[in-house]
Amino acid sequence: MPIAIAIASLLGIAGAVALLKRSIVRGFPDVCVVCAGVSATWFWILIAHHAGRLTDPQWLTIAAVLLGGSVVGLTEQWSKRRGTPFPHWEKALALAVGFAIAYVAIASWWGVALAGAIVLASAITFAAQPAERRASSVPPGVETLKRQLEKECC
Image (cartoon, rainbow, N blue to C red; front, top):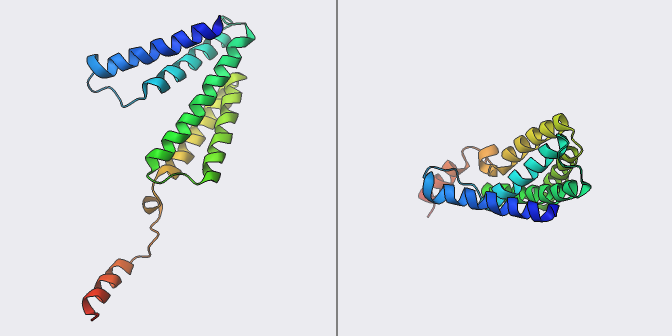
């Protein structure tokens, strides 16, 4: 029964976000409706479990699956928004850290999970910037030199 409730929650929240995006609020943030449904569902499951309302261990399994989907989805979205895909080692590292954060969230170590999420988001935000924005890959003056050579050369 818990899986049916979780699926209904995911679909209901995703549908509500889709309606908000389409009709009610024109300036609604560009949020993936499925991502909103998944993340809101695992969030309320963890809060209810921590409050002692959901004692069946199936709820934590469902939350773990949904959290894993969120970690993979976020990593993929950050990679897409970067402009150039993450190298495989950066994506693997982001996934490993994300799964560790998901584990500590499931274990109800909220402070550790929050701190880890902030550090990971900061690191990925930095890494998601194109290399040109982080540090110029072309030394200063090279473009000027190229233009001068093109003009002066035969």
